[in-house]
Length: 192
Image 1 (cartoon, rainbow, N blue to C red):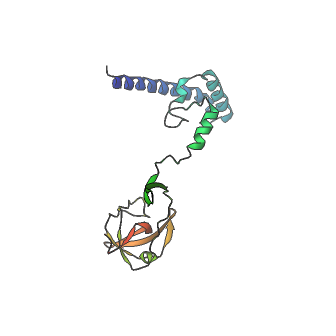
Image 2 (cartoon, rainbow, N blue to C red):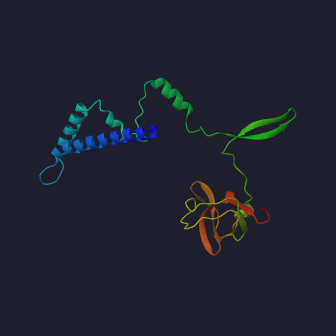
Image 3 (cartoon, rainbow, N blue to C red):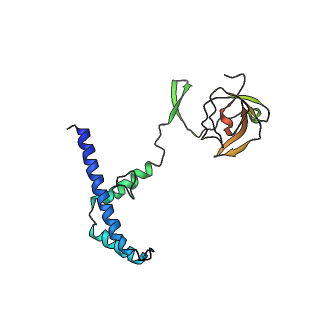
């Protein structure tokens, strides 16, 4: 039997044990149901506490519910975890570098994703024809049914507003209206 099939069989066995244990828990907690169909919540809490005390060292507790990604994370060294999590605060993306020519030659400077690109304000005024510099998904726009493709010719039909923390405008393309198009993707017609 290959290693992959062994892992799949072991995973299936663990899942079956977890399902069986969950059925037993549901059956145990069904004692808290009153004859009229309502739930006695005090009895439910007592039964749940009994179950947790009886199965405190159950390895099946870590499967699925109450965990991240289906696996439990046991933290053994709390100080090390705090030190690591302080450094890893979501800034683990690779930073882009820009090349700058100096007297000594090339030097690399890190550039931030939050650097603001200056947009020509004349591009965001009503009635201006522009092109789109990248594909814009329908999920990124406001109530759109289809996406806008790169290079599409559009006409701006509204004033600037904010949508999802971006400066946006409403545009018309091929007789359809698209709301929530970011201003940063607009380019003048002469630029290709």
